[in-house]
Length: 101
Image (cartoon, rainbow, N blue to C red; front, side, top):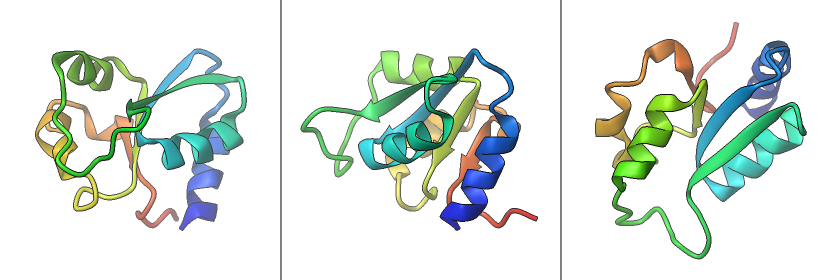
């Protein structure tokens, strides 16, 4: 699954000004390892916070809506994002668990 995502990422990093948002630090680290400094990768749940019971702030929702790309693990793993993600176009969302053909 991760290999498939890496392939998708590497095919799409030609756009040097990508603003990518990830929900957690581990996903941010994975994405940064692939895109390097060709994109800016933000994280929603930062610092010592955990995604368990996390509450999105208006600034997080703006961040999601303004992103060029949102990379998530799975909707069931990050339920705190699901409502806010309804307004994000599906073509801007990649799940690390999705099959890539």
